[in-house]
Image (cartoon, rainbow, N blue to C red; front, side, top):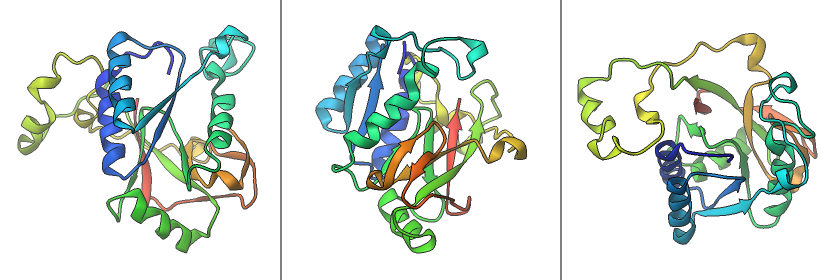
Length: 224
C-alpha cells in the first residue's frame, strides 16, 4: 500500500472479506493518506487488520511499475515479491490458508457463501495443500454502465459521495478475458506450510504445485 488514497474501495473490500469469513487481513503499508490511516486504525482495533510497516524503500529503490521500463529500480514493483514471501512465512503457523492478493481484488465463491465453505470444497475436488489458482476477471473503474433501477439506490449511497475512492459496486462492465494473458494473470489461496517461494502470480516452488479452480466454483473480481 503506497501513497494509498482509495478509501471507499478499501472499506468495501474489508467488509466483503468479513462477510466471506476472513479472520485476518495483513496489509503491507509504505505510505497512505490520513483518511486511509483512520480506516486502518479502525479495523486494526476491531481485530480484522494487521498493518505491517513496509520500509523497504529505506534500504533499496523499488520500481514503481510492474514493468522495468515503466519505472526502473533496485527491486521489482515496490518490493511486492519480498512482501508476499514475508507474508507466507510470517503466518505459516498462524493460518490454515493465506490468500495472496491486492486490495483491489476479491476472490468470490460462486456456489457457496463463504471461504470456510469454499476451502473444504477445493480440498475435496483438487486435493489438500495445493496452491489454488483463481481466474482474474477485470472490472475497470474507468467504465460505467447504467445501473439497474432496483439497485441504484443501494449502490449509490448518499453517505459515500464524500468518501475518496472507487465504489466497486457501481462498476459492472466486465472486460473480456484474453486467452494469451489468462494463464499468467491470476491470484492464489495457499496452505503456507506447503509453500517455499511465492511470486506475484502463483508460486515458484511448493510441495504439491498449483491447480486452476473452475470459474463456476470461484473466481477473482478485480476492480482496477
